[in-house]
Length: 240
Image (cartoon, rainbow, N blue to C red; front, side, top):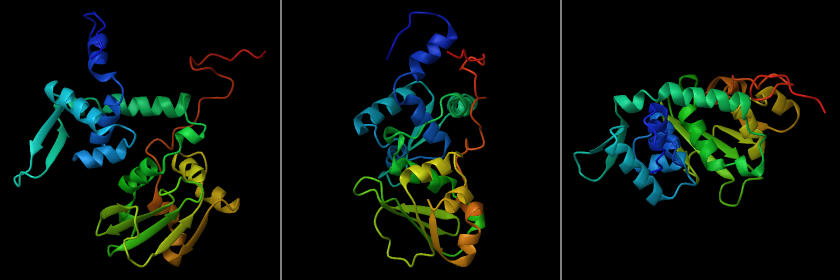
């Protein structure tokens, strides 16, 4: 753990929370992930050993509660009151990042695994049929093994599959990973993507017609970029 050698409460909080990956784990717990493998799907580039270490630190600090299920075969993690009190901080970090440090969608920012996990947990199932509905996504530009995904919604529960679940597909979306990420983050609308030929949708007429109702968007998609001509301090940028 990093040490700042200051009594300042900001420094003390940063000693615990500013280490790499820690706040992303908190983000995942706030989003509802409970099991180790679900946490890993939300932070796919984090080494399992590092995640175990960070969870142990957060547990010892009283931010995370670790519980064993009655079967003894699985462990769940939940935020304590101290952890839940971090929600406004995480929300504000996301708002600030979307406004002042939003992604330009470089290749390094594109991650099909995390994108689909984010879509899965934000899918608006109340706008989908109650019975099983299978939604297929094809990303031709994604790396090998990450090009084809399926979401299976059944009575409000959603499973994410990287292998064909074997169900009849109700609606099929084909577009680049970059375009889907831009749509998800609010930089491109579904209508714009379809109008430019970036998105192809076919399947159930009802589902294709109501695509914007059930697909949703990132919780930060409504945050616009900082006003043009201003720097990160809100000052007018100097033109040279």
